[in-house]
Length: 244
Image: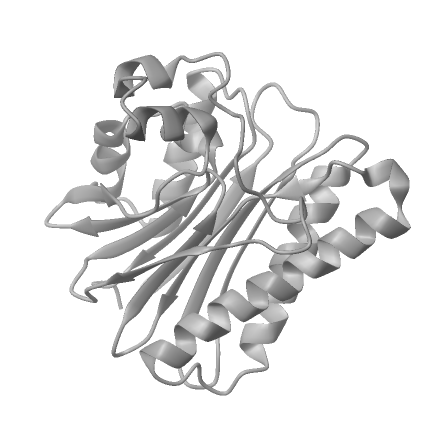
């Protein structure tokens, strides 16, 4: 098993509001997380950094997440804690009002694989050389697609495609979706929408299925995104189960 992550400001933004981490605790359990911050005056950078730092520290301080039910409760708890930290930060720093962040996480143990998300950063698994999206975006257009008011194709270029219905730091409480996935997968990928807005699923699959090293794959994904415009910050966390 091998894993790595990479983040890049892209070609348009002058700073990076994404934060990423992959951490392993003393039990060998692995937590991956990507946060895509929002808010002016460095608010997005602060928001994603607070969330990722708090989540990583809490996980590392935990000997084990326990059984699946305990682990789900733990994920929701650490995200709620991060949310309260962000909400309090904006109360104490009025100039940062409106800042927040998405979050997508994957928790892998010997017995189970869980995904959690708030916002539009995405979680995928790779199985038999195919990339499957696990998470569901909390966006206005996704809501309209689910209700039948928009097609998937219309949603791709909708002028309000980035309007979030949920984010960390927006309210005192926040609800995270949790997905329970079979552990029999070949890879796990988390990313900010800076990647998925630039590259189609098939383009990402082609890179992940190549003979490159894991770090080279991440570099190539970011390079391809930048070549197509790089209109946003780009972050990817990737784990291959088959590696040594």
